[in-house]
Amino acid sequence: MNLVLFGPPGAGKGTQSKILTEKRGLPQLSTGDMLRAAIEAGTPLGLACKALMAKGELVPDETVIGIIADRYDQPDCKNGAVFDGFPRTIPQAEALDKMLERRRRQIDMVIELKVDDAALLARVEARIKAGGVLRSDDTPETLTHRLGVYYKNTAPLIGYYQGQGKLKTIDGMAGIEAVTSQIASLLDAI
Ligand code: AMP
Image 1 (cartoon, protein in one colour):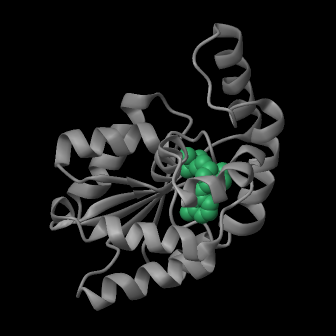
Image 2 (cartoon, rainbow, N blue to C red):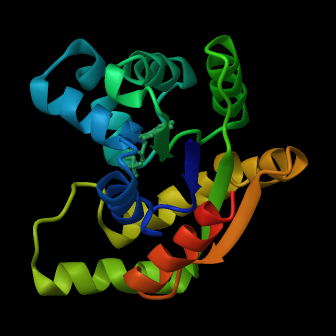
């Protein structure tokens, strides 16, 4: 099964992807994690993306399309994967469809985690107050910018996947376990 978890930054896609990996053995393909690993390793790709990511801008489509295709061809994706934070633009979604088609596969479902912007900002503020380890882009200012980028570039994918009849929307504001069980009900109904 190939699944896209969709929603604004901070909606909980990463948390739910990890749970899906644990419970259903579907690897989490997070372009954000892959890019952060490239920055950490100091690769040319990482260096090229570092400033854009720190500002909350998207990195170029070709960059993420390339890393996703390489990752998807690893043996652990033979039964599918959970795409987390990818696609984020219409060209990325089209490239993903083509990539899967070439491998005689397809996206089976897109699950949108619907959340409230004000609550997302409140969560960042709470993380800062709690003094935990924060990502360099985990600030109210960058989140506000990332939300703007999301509505401009990524939200149009809702129409794209609705048109394919694949979009399911759930309440991402519920607690982690409640969101997990909403996702489980959708997947069990396939
Ligand atoms: P994330 O961890 O998914 O929130 O991603 C962190 C940052 O990585 C984003 O703000 C972008 O700068 C970059 N990024 C991750 N995934 C993508 C993508 N699919 N397209 C473009 N940029 C991305």
